[in-house]
Image 1 (cartoon, rainbow, N blue to C red):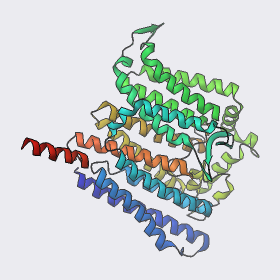
Image 2 (image 1 turned 180 degrees about the vertical axis):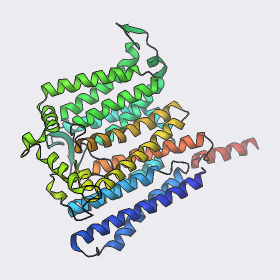
Image 3 (image 1 turned 45 degrees about the vertical axis):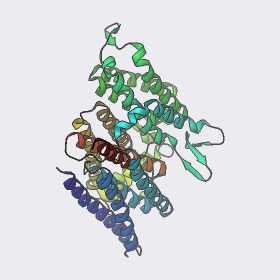
Image 4 (image 1 turned 30 degrees about the horizontal axis):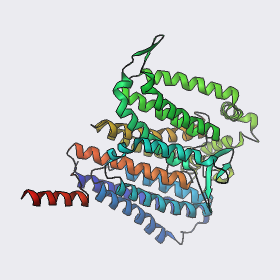
Length: 448
């Protein structure tokens, strides 16, 4: 598929995503008040305007990128906004502002990162940035503890979670370090019993970086992000070395760490007990998960209809449990549509990784996609009681400016990597910067 055909496909999918968003918004208003919303025209214009801006930026700056990535993110963002507006109009206004900032961050990232492999030159800088962002909530008078987790900072009147940006920085660091050491890490020359491991000098730096990040997150009470970092580390190590033994060892270490946390950390033990039997604490810690289960039950196959459910009975429904609100009003069909959108988004990222010929681009695409996929699985699995619930945001759907802006930056890096892969495959032209064009003209003048 040529670059022009990909962008035209993307434009068509974006128009469809905007139509679905506006239709849900309209139906939700009809379900609540039996009248059309007065602001439906401006709302449609703003939705289309933001998406078209992102599309034009992609068409100009990354014309060879996968055409599915941006529309799926836009669809998830749009559906999430509709349900946030459904439960809290004040938060919906804030989410609209953060969506504007997120789209701006998407365009800015595409403009600044002209080649994904340029990030490889900043591998150790990215490590410092990532760790620095994780440490910020511990700074006195800056860090804030909310709902038992010290993962927030407040500057002026603005609060945000620096850990959301730290995930991206550390994913890029892991990719850069593993590219440089993949051959050494793939050769087991150090024997410990039946295991053959790389030399400690090659494995120790990345282990130290991972352990530091996970320790900080556990200290902050952000166990969901600690799980995501652990999975990211193991997956990238496996892809870089192509040794399944890392997956096996990672699984054993995760099981041991999970059991140790269950035995020693009250918060973890409570989450596991609520997961196994929420009815024991139906009036306290189990209340939210029980109400979420009721929401799915009342939704059934087709849902109660937009605006006709009662998702506000679920505490913090706009954050952890927005998937339950979607399941109630759109039913199994709507919940499945969200799952399919995530599968298409993740599939686009993994398709980029499979097609990549450069190791760094492959690992970066895998890392960024893993962040999205694991985070979506952890929160949707927690809401449906497939796994214990952890407090992470559903990418592009849940309320939260930090998560939304960070995910748009992540999406831009994934789009940039997809375009670079297309250029390597000869499916898109190389777009030279103004400086490169001036240098080429000067060289041609001298040679002439």
